[in-house]
Image (cartoon, rainbow over all chains, first blue to last red; front, side, top):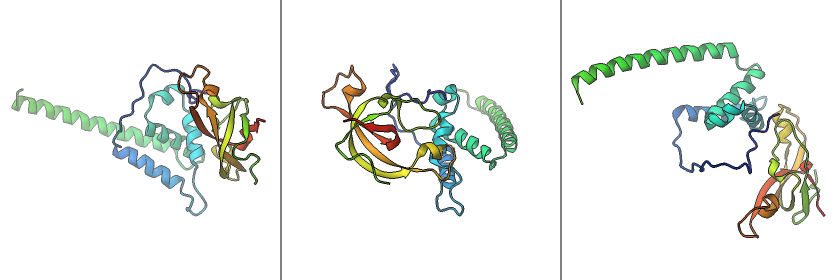
Length: 124
Length: 95
């Protein structure tokens, strides 16, 4: 296994960003989903462990590991683990993501059309 | 499961390579430290990470390392230390 996640002691010229980031609604949902999946009081035991989550994150390609945000990595790991266990239908998920992406772009295009109209009414 | 090491005892972290998920960062492997406390006995995260629901149990220790032991070029005060929590199967007797 690659060791790109084991960065302790690796030199870096990048300053550490110590600022607090307010959580976005989808990040709170990812967190809630993880709590649900790891719930030890669930009949039959937890669906996955935090150790599987960590291993899934460490198994991400190096570019993803370095480039994605904290909860993005959580989500990709959860999808990988739960797909492997057969609890997530990967094809159905991909289909749903494509549908949401299409509707987002359609909505975004309409908003831009609206921006154009307002710009005419209120010239800067 | 009785812990093999006690607080104050010198230990050496195994210098071996690893596959899969482990909680032992490379920067402490092969380094000497002292047991600061026994944290308890927990299921082995390496087995849990592989999806093993019947993971074996391992004592977990908080091990204290001198910064100079980990980073020979460390420029801070000599007494500076780092505590790392490590499972027993990664530790050897350091006496």
